[in-house]
Image (tube, rainbow, N blue to C red; front, side):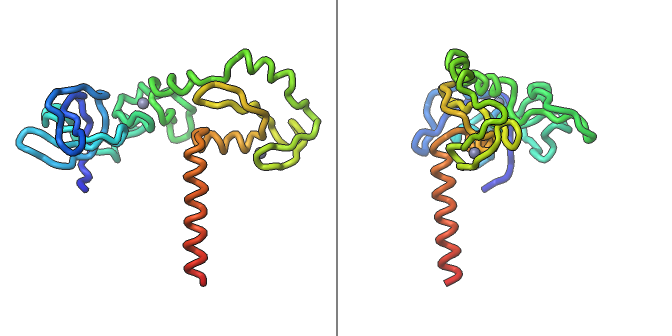
Length: 207
Ligand SMILES: [Zn+2]
Ligand SMILES: [Zn+2]
């Protein structure tokens, strides 16, 4: 596979459906990042990593990108969700450290989409009444670990990031864990399948 990354500055082209490009021109996210699969006279066939789609686009509608020169230290950065190349100003500042400004990995637009799934306030209020009090003992339903609320563990109200529904109180550590797995069952299933597969491979190797 080629490693020529381009940004589709025009955001239009022919989508490949079942291998062949469609006849009509359609738009997609401007500045989507992709790899050149094939070069034709004045066209490129580009695979877009964000949407996992292949498009034929005009050569004039793309610009080559040195992806190693993108990020907080440069003028442009690639969003980790939409995979568009955008000015760094489109990424909120996270913190400043001694190396300079650190910005969020997702662009402002993608972040607003994430924030939409905040916990439902009516449910959150009800939930607060049952919140384990500081100093009480608590057993996390996920890791089964016992802790003293607010002393040996922070307890948080877990919510479904897709629907905003509140689930239950869990320990902060498990909450971070679920967050890392994008709160999705599929991600967790993949993780379990991966662990099982790797484990069985190791058993075979050792025996
Ligand atoms: Zn984005
Ligand atoms: Zn836990």
